[in-house]
Image (cartoon, rainbow, N blue to C red; front, side, top):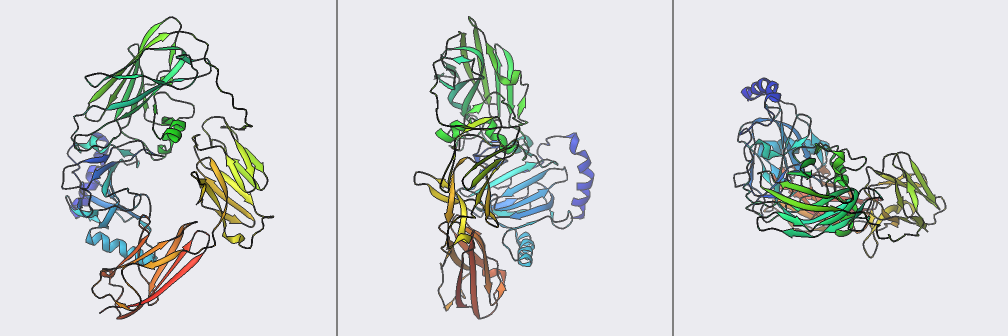
Amino acid sequence: MKKILLLFLITSSLYSQSEYPQDYFRNPLDITLVLSGTFAELRSAHFHAGLDIKTQRKQGLKVYSAAEGYVSRIKISHYGYGKALYITHPNGYTTVYAHLQRFSDRLEKYIKECQYEKETFEVEVFPSNEELLIAPDEVIAYSGNTGGSGGPHLHFEIRDNQERPINPMLFGIDIKDTKQPFVSAVYAYPKDENAVINGKNERVPLRLIPKQNGDYEVEKITAYGNIGFGITSYDKQDLAPNNNGVSNIETFFNGNKSLEIDFKRFSFSETKHIKRLIDYDYFKTKKSRIQKLFIEKNNPLSLYKDAFDNGYIIVEDSTSSVFKIRIRDFKGNETLINIPIKGKYEVPEPKTIDYLNKTTILSNKPTELKSGLVTVNFYKNTVYEDVDIDFNVSSDTLHLHKDNIPLQKKFYINYDLSNYKSEHLDKVFIARLYGYYKRPSYVRTKRKGNILSAGCKTLGTYALAMDTVAPRIKPVNFKDKKWLSKYRYLKVKIDDDLSGISKYRATVNGKWILMEYDYKTNMLIHDFNDNIVKDTKNNLKIIVTDNVGNSSTFEATFFRK
């Protein structure tokens, strides 16, 4: 192990000499790599930071260290990455393994000691670089489905020494892929009110014509002024049917390069700005992501290269020109789109005028909206550009436009309950109303005196809601006064209908026990192999509290030899 540390100190100085070392990192699983998700793939509110590796629809596959190094971080959370392990390597990179079922025996022992010391399931620790050294090809964990995972798989990342995720395939992690990317839609966008596309001053879908070689032709369009284009595109690998993300997009106008988007690396600080890359309004209304091939105001993404005039083109009257789009996957398979353009000035069709009262939110200044008992604060740079929104308060319901405008950061809602009549005022919270039936969903609410406040990430309809019902607790694999000598696990189901589970605590004979919580199944599970429960007669007590303070207590007695 001392040799590993010495090698780390020697080779870390060579980090900058080889940006992407080949054959340094191994496949973290002992199976052929098949992906369900690719690097920088477009997700709902972020770029995917690694590779999602299929684990044959099961959990418990051995996960190997991609290279020698030391454990620099372990994080266990109910959501997100679930059980995650971070290993820093001698060459300066860090590999990340997420959604794990459990860690290897020695790492499991280490982290459980931390959990019992802190009396909490959710922990985050940063061991020293000599504390948990990792050998080459060491089994470090077992694959799982913890956290926000939608099914069993291993999430695998490689990060640089600035914590920026990089496409692991740049390091020689190989995925079989001989298929071209494919395109499902192409759109043209006017930059301003003076631009016209096929007689319209709005986003226009273009007729896509597939060619036998896998490329595409677009039916000739007429246009005038400053315009941009957008595409909906995906890639498939040979061994999986999933629609994955592409690796690179380039555009050309009359043979000259206009823009390049390279999805090989990004920082976590910018990933939320995916809302500026995609057509957010279209995504929220049609559930499909159009990648805009132009750069709008206040777009801080580092993915762009060689942007001429921010990717927009100028089409003049009585001209003929060609716009080309080249889409590539990591293996170099490419697809071309050819868009012929006839320059023609036309008076655009009149737009439908919205006569509803609008409120303007400024991008470069704070804006405060107030009506009745509600105040809404948009701080500077909450929106990317000045926008007009619907703002209306009816009783305690706040109608704040709809979720089709991208936001850079949270806005804040405040309710003044000074004159609010309720015998359960302490159980009132701010909720977002979802769906056709406007079901309330808890928004993290803070209370200061008679003021309720919440930071919100999306526009929509909000209201006050009240939760006076305590969570439910139900034993799953045992009942009161049962012998559990042959059981390895103690299982309890917990749930809450409205505000949701906030915290829980379990003890046996007054001593805290670790119960892992899976929010997807509402299950609390204790492993008797923790060797905490040693008595024959045991009194179990579980207290579960929801987000407004309603609390339930479950007690039972069980026996073990």
